Length: 104
Image 1 (cartoon, rainbow, N blue to C red):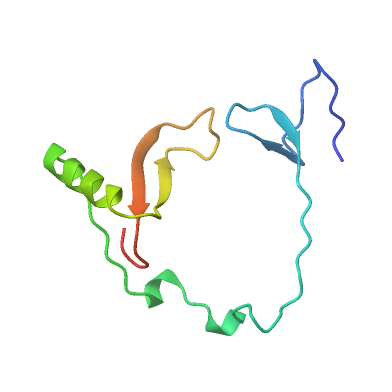
Image 2: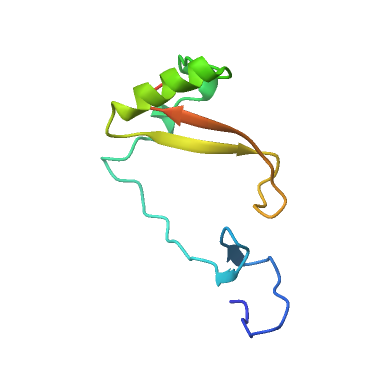
């Protein structure tokens, strides 16, 4: 495990960074064995095998309609679309919202 001492530069190897790039120890996870409730790899589908419907929202009218729709539901899935996976280097280029499977 990485050594974390105040004032010393940290290596990105084995370190997970938060939104503000503070060094934090990597979280170790244990992969559980496959059980009967988990989908088998053979039953999983790729994006090309699933019917999806995407909407592009750009105008103020479309934004207002989206806000009205999102206000009516209790569960929303959202994602940020950026130019880089490093939060310190990334620029926000879009937001993705979903309230139904296969539609965003």
